[in-house]
Image 1 (cartoon, helix red, strand yellow):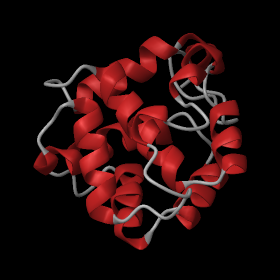
Image 2 (tube, rainbow, N blue to C red):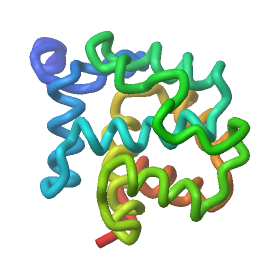
Image 3 (cartoon, rainbow, N blue to C red):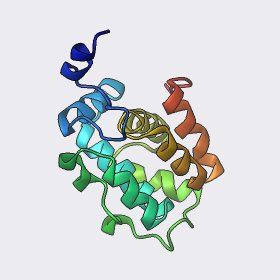
Image 4 (cartoon, one colour):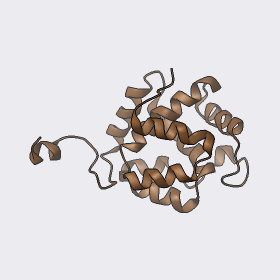
Length: 153
């Protein structure tokens, strides 16, 4: 593939600078056609804001395209459940399901789809930092999305 071809495509730059809001949401839609992509991303980002440190959330947001950063807020006012990082698995899944108005059994698939699109926007180093702060019960979904395997049905 020529350098000119790479510049013309809507793909990740390799520098942790994503493409744009539309391409991110298109990637989410490709994974989750039955959900509104923006709402799915917002629900997952809201959940992540309860699990990750403020510093890591800021670093993650800085790697997103400017027009997408608003979805990744510092905190989620809709679902303030307790101190950051202290959300258990059931509460987290229920929070994402309620935010998206979806059935809890669909949450893992939603997480996988949004995580896959998010991985395409951030550097590998940033993805490893996120994985390191995620609880063990969510690390597998994060890793599977990065590798494109184990997509829940």
